[in-house]
Length: 474
Image 1 (spheres, one colour):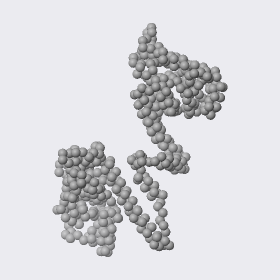
Image 2 (cartoon, rainbow, N blue to C red):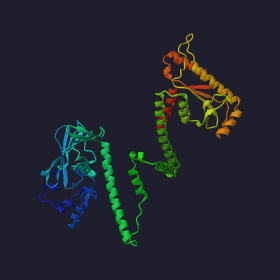
Image 3 (cartoon, one colour):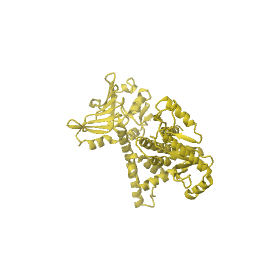
Image 4 (cartoon, one colour):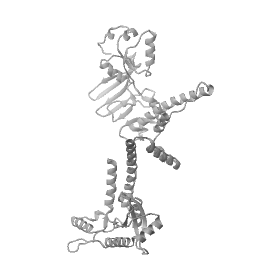
């Protein structure tokens, strides 16, 4: 309470004195609150509690604001500002302030909190780096919440550890330091440890309660019905145990079961059409982002290697949706020559059933001739061959459309329409266009093509990356 409060003038404070004033203390069930209520009740008094909190520092704040007299736990603390950038926090028994000990030293300039555990602990201090105040996992009363300090002692005390650091930025490490070891635990990992212990403690209480319910049901089944675990509780247990570390241990059947569950989730979670559509959109964005990121990584790895046309053809056919989202099906090794020796690398069928043709060359295939002729660059002979071949494919595909349509239906069980098909030649890379003249002449040559589109490999990669960016911004 404030120093000028009337109760400060009372030499021997009684509950009757205290009951005359508004009180600020713990929420019922926290830190001795029930004992406090019993003490007042036994004296025939009623505590005039006007505000409650679950934490001592909140109660102190209420007292500073003049909201009432604070009643806190037996162990209390005191904050002492020793310099501009350094603050110390001492803890002590509330009835014996002389027995205080240093619990924390906070250096705001260094962004470091030093925690001083009790004497039985294996190190005399724990460095908490990256903080300008005591983290929420630590109590201002001088201990780590959820009994974490016991488990740190259990796991590290016999490992010759002389320094323990909890860091917001550094990674977990167990390294040699002179004759002993220095251990660094990343704050995210430490926070997860405390959180998991809290869940386990709560789960333990639940399991004990459930055991007692079942025990009395077995003894007196007529008086104690069996208690079913609620779906809500089971959902909580599932969510608390979700952890990326279990992924590698999942069997194929587990994965299939999760996929089935995911399907049920998106189809049955919401009845509202708007919320269902939003959930479906969110799920699709996440799945597409993973799929496209994987393909981008594979694409970039292939570009750094030296793969033949067949390998590139298989990769692009497998990822046909990257070329254009309108395509929904592929036809490998399409024979549009009808008894000719060479086949198209593959054909793609769009959502309306129309067929387009794709010819695959390598990223290293030269686009332009090495030297200009009369001041202009022209197609390299390899590119000319690819373009001529693509023109032949288009000519034969359209000329013999009925027979080709029938063959595709018979062999692939796929109905297609062949009307003014287009061809795409995937070839080369823009890094070959190493001066403005080559770039401009390539643009002219490319736009002179009537029914054929030239797609460079790096352009295709950029299309995929643009598609990923589109997904993230939907």
